[in-house]
Length: 129
Image (cartoon, rainbow, N blue to C red; front, side, top):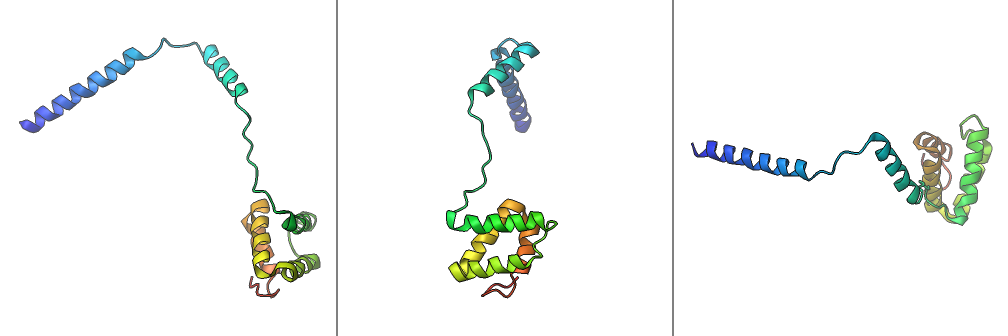
């Protein structure tokens, strides 16, 4: 019996809460008013643009060259230049720099192309693709 009273009391409380919220709502706007208000509000907000992470200047040349190879070589890194660039990066900054460049290529082109690059760099320095 006690449980039933709790259920009834809870139901009445919820009814009172929702009843008050309905009464407090402003009068409904027309569709045009809602659309024009939304347009005004969005025009006042600064545009949001997704910007990919900034590429450090010392790595930008490598990422740019690799992306160019990928796009001009039928969406593949199957080029001798890919190996040459990997050797340059390894000579300048070693394995860690190669990882950074590969991660930036992944951000620019996606996981599939980055995996292709990992495979093509196999055997350069400590790199194991």
